[in-house]
Structures are given as structure tokens and as C-alpha cells.
Length: 208
Image (cartoon, rainbow, N blue to C red; front, top):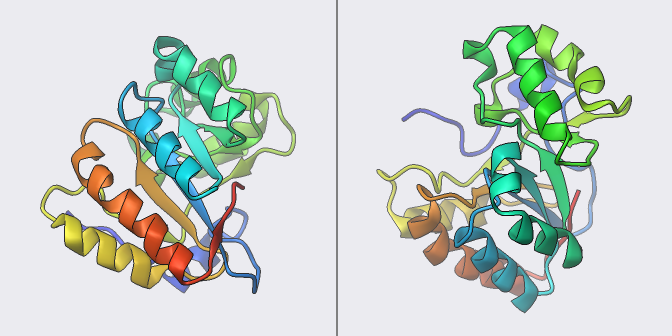
């Protein structure tokens, strides 16, 4: 499985209108969680965040919001932000533009946000141009990431996932974890230790 743990500068420059990180010198990182809400993983994440007085942004799949509305409600009640992650977790490179934008629009019926993250980070130029209309928000921000934890990669040891997530974090980093079935065995190990390690480095955690 090939992917960048740390997003390279040239990729950020290739798509400058997308948000890859936050320009700041403050010791703050921005945790994001993709693919929820999940009935087990998301409550676990929320409990851990509460322990460290940490805020985060959850990029939610529309169909999961309707299936787990109570968990979704808890995200907002505890002061976190949400973002649109499509209705059915579509890969933009493998989906025609009208179908993709209709799926984003369907998710926006359940997710009130000006933040959008394309599943797999894959979105075509025409799709990105249609996001504002699909979400009925003229100031929609397409949020990518600076650090990809790799918690979804079962070939990577939990300890390695933790080590590289901590080592790649910088002031303003947007870091991706996943609150879903596939990633949860790794996330359950990594997240508490990641929060502790970064806290000990005197960073704080904020939402976007």
C-alpha cells in the first residue's frame, strides 16, 4: 500500500486552494477523524479526547450519520466540528462528476458544515469546482492533511503507526485518523498514546 505519511511540499503546491495544514507557529495540531460516526470507535475517540481536553474535527459519511444519529449528536454536544465526507464514501477518481456531486449533496442534508474532505483524498477538478453548489455553501473548504497516520494499513505495526504519527507532527499539522471498523484495532492502541505524547510535548489540540 503506497501513500505519503507526510504530505510533500510539491503536492501542496499543486493544489494550493485545498487546506493541507494551518499556518501557525503555535504548538497546536488539528486532529481529524474520517468515516464515522461509528457505534464503537467514535465513542472511544470522544472519551479519549475528553481525557485530554482535546477538540477535533470529524469528517462524517452521510449514511453513517443517519444510522448512528445519537453518536453524531454527541460529537457536536462535546464541542467538536463535523465535515462532509460524502454520503457513501465515493472515490472521486472512479465516479463521474454528476454522481459524485449528488452524493455530496445527499450528505449535506444530514451534515451542516462548510468543511469537505474527499474520501481517499481523490477528487477531480470539475468535482472540486462543484462542491460549493453541492453543499449549498459558497465558502466550502476542501480539507486535506499534513500527516496521514496509516491506522487503516494492517501491514503496519501499531507501534510504528504511533511512532511516525508523533514524529511527523508539527505546529499547524492536520492529522488523519479513522473511526471505522478497519482502523479501530490500531486506533485503540495509538490514539491514547498519541494524545499523551503530543501533550507531553506541550501541544494543544484544536478543531478546524
